[in-house]
Length: 193
Image (cartoon, rainbow, N blue to C red; front, side, top):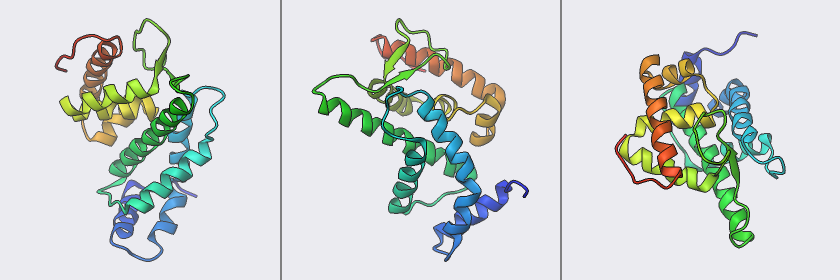
């Protein structure tokens, strides 16, 4: 079986958004493998004893998408929203776990792959989420680049295609965003991106 085309996925996303019967059921098998890859990328950065499984993360994201009755412009928009939803699920989990332990161990994320030079090799997932929200207010595209590259596990080329910008733009945004996040997570003063 040939992989689905971007056009086919976009067509089904629009049909689903328009309420066309059966569009969701035809769409999900076409995007499921990519959603699993996205979830695996997120979960690879979680602690080994994390209680949420990859499949459960995908299914929870499905549920939230259906409940939100979201509409999508195209394949890139869909996967971008899925990345945000998965991140939100993991942040919510980390917050609830931290509250349950009265400020105990928060969910940790290895930033090694992101090559963000920090004094420690692990970062509080909640702190990273807060920093990304700050970055999003200053520069939404750079925030999306971090989300797709770090959390989504996408290459520079895949991120460029997803955001419909050049590879050079993604590489520059990635470099600047990592620097900005490093400063935020180390407790530096806020600065422009």
